[in-house]
Length: 103
Picture 1: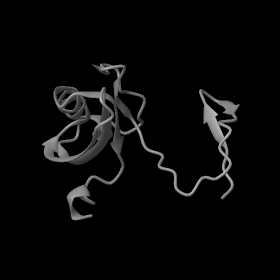
Picture 2: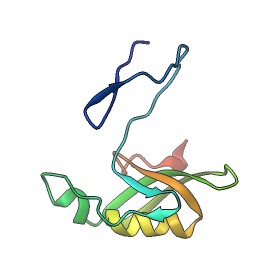
Picture 3: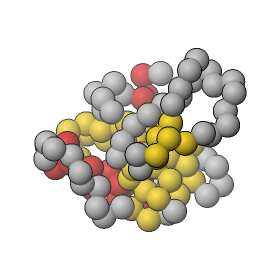
């Protein structure tokens, strides 16, 4: 698998040599244990404000993996939910309608 990683527009070498699977999603919901306030930057405000089924993945301080799906929430509410579940880091997964619990 070939890949290119950019961070803030700068090409970054992560040093991975044997990547089998990678997930890319946005926006970040929780960073360093704090729910992010400014999740903006989307051209379509429905991405942030729309109340739809959403999925997220996060990790707790004790490295517990959190995989959740909630109905009728916006991005800011999902960030607060992930923080309340103990996420230290969390990200929204695109396509909330593909529920994680089905896997």
